[in-house]
Length: 72
Image 1 (cartoon, rainbow, N blue to C red):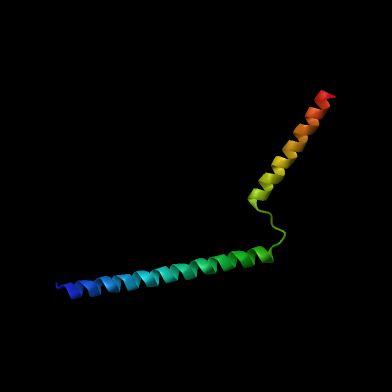
Image 2 (cartoon, rainbow, N blue to C red):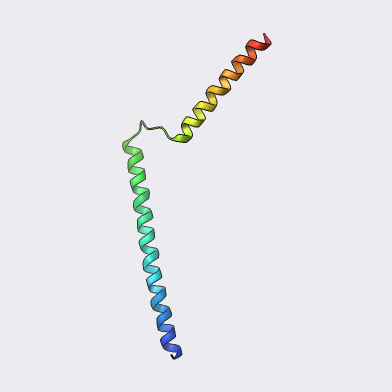
């Protein structure tokens, strides 16, 4: 194999990888759009992180009330 044919093969491989990268980028953008549209269409849903924060807040309030009742 001469040098030019090796260069041509490498260029073809690079082009195929660029096509794959473009396909992956399009897929990621489509997924992001779907998630965004899903979040906008369901404004009443609450995420897991928000449930955790609410639970921690309730626990904190209960602990403060217990501490106040214990001190006074």
